Image (cartoon, rainbow, N blue to C red; front, side):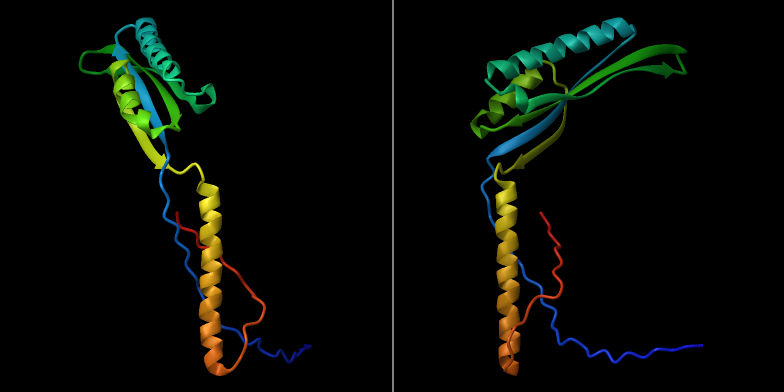
Length: 173
């Protein structure tokens, strides 16, 4: 059996965490909304669902929302069997996702899409159009915060901060 011993000198280090927070004004919203229709005839259910979604799309276009800012996310037509009545019904759904960049139109859009046939609002997410920039700024603040803390600690010891050995990102949005 061969054994090797290596004299490894420990690297002097301290572990510091920093925090960066940016408060932002939310300037846009993403809305996921669904038209859901039910009935006894698959063809009629699908046709009614399509008509309601067409009315929703006309409203969206009339509000001058860019075509790139709305898209169909899901379309389905499923049979439902009622075991008590021993008959089939059908359920059709279409889900659309809308990015609204002008929050002043939010109430008008929400009221309009419900009036035109949307009967399920699945998700509403307010956000910033400059999210990536805000996240980068928060990371820079966190690094400055960590460096400042490290300098405070080592100054008491009469030492200096050296090069970073490990950087870990625990980003929370």
